[in-house]
Image 1 (cartoon, rainbow, N blue to C red):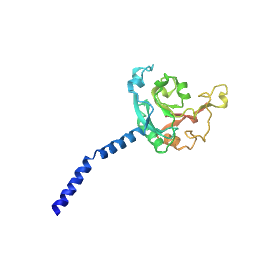
Image 2 (cartoon, rainbow, N blue to C red):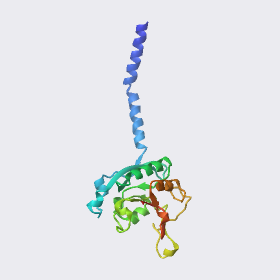
Image 3 (cartoon, rainbow, N blue to C red):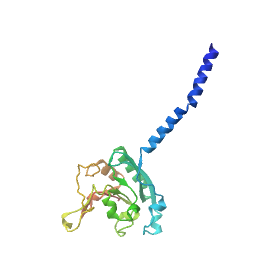
Image 4 (cartoon, rainbow, N blue to C red):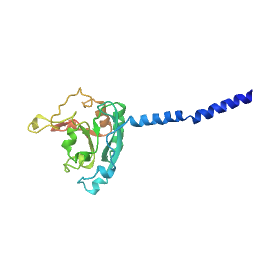
Length: 214
């Protein structure tokens, strides 16, 4: 009797472990999980810096990092930030915080996609760090700043600069729109904790999408 019982148990174990339907289900689940993340870009470092006019001394300071975030469609996306190695740890912390808090980010794609055109990137509501422009004063020229959701958080000139044009063209600031920053916003406060200055505090303009290392 005991002999037959042991034999039955052995047959059940062998059948379960060899059941092809069970293996298919496991594989299928893994496939579903991998497809749940929408990939917005998948550049190599060489591709991400292609066409930049930056000298090699600047390019050698850059790092390309993968980040995940909830986009405006409510789904998790994967993008990339081309940034300076000095702030890449902080950028990873910020995006982890953004993901955990489900703060919507439209897209995160190196600006090479927009042919290094800051205006085109802003119009697309694209988040990016490095762009070799305005070299004398812009921290983007070394990848030491990041712009997040520029269309939701447009650059607005103060009254003393009334003849200057807000950017991006057509964007309107509305703090009620998800993905928009305001003074006590958790993401703004997290940036400050990590040693970043918020562009809203600039003298001549409210550059609400901009955060730079102090």
